Image (cartoon, rainbow, N blue to C red):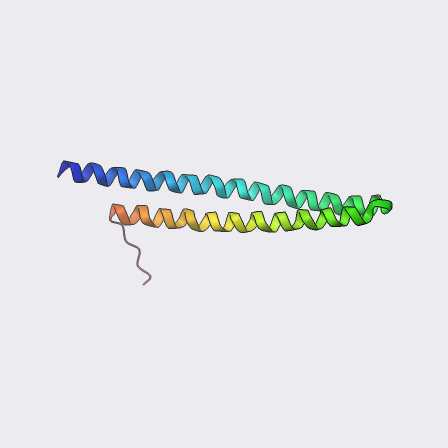
Length: 100
């Protein structure tokens, strides 16, 4: 019986670590989305300030915007992975969530 309790504890610990890992990745992806968005805004400003190279700045603005959207999507994905790990952890601990 003691072996089952210890195994149960280790299983829960693994899910807790997984949840923390996904939370960390979610936060990094949010930071990357903010940085890419800031870069896109900077390039938009540069396009107005430097009309001779406006075409290049507009291209880099679009690349920055695409990177921001991609990083935002990754953050969203990691958020759901974190929630799934939390649900698995609670399931392993015997906690149940009911919709009604």
